[in-house]
Image 1 (cartoon, each protein chain N blue to C red):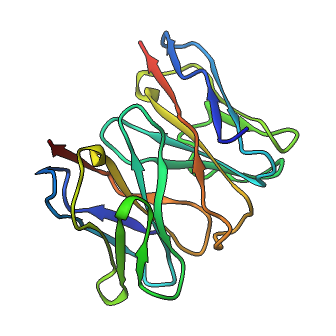
Image 2 (cartoon, one colour):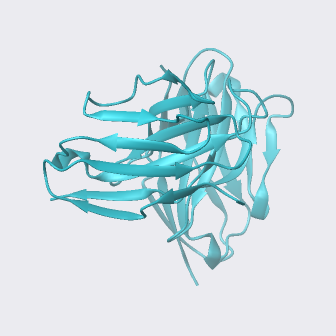
Length: 112
Length: 117
């Protein structure tokens, strides 16, 4: 079974700062990779996904993620955060099957 | 509807009570998933349906947990004789196809927060 680790539990930063959230997974085969976001009081929403092709994936709201196969990583980035990016971010993986394995999540707080 | 809906949104049960949680997936979605999210953790897989067939129930924590999707649309997760450790958010997700391909992005509902006293 695959496992997912997210490096940071809580990140606090100011508006306009750059954001990078780490995600590593443990599985040697082909994987599908996802970042989901949960804004306060809302449900999990898909930010972006990687299935194949260009390892640099662009998602909604200016987010992007880079799949580095040799490092088993799928880090999420945003060059300049806004207060509205305050949310919890989850990295998730599925491999040969449909089950999503999630990391524990990273809470991002953006100070205005 | 436009998205996955779940009801009730909040449920408080006394220990030992049975509860039933409902999920309405996106219309036309073949696959339906249940996940359990404990406080401060990511969601963990419970069970998976493709149409009305329950293809995987390996994540159900005990035989007190039971899920069904009799007509291939609405699903119910039932927990019998609830225990305090069952307190969590129960998430339902649906996807258009089945099997982990590009069509199979899972779309999540708002969840049901279960508190067992």
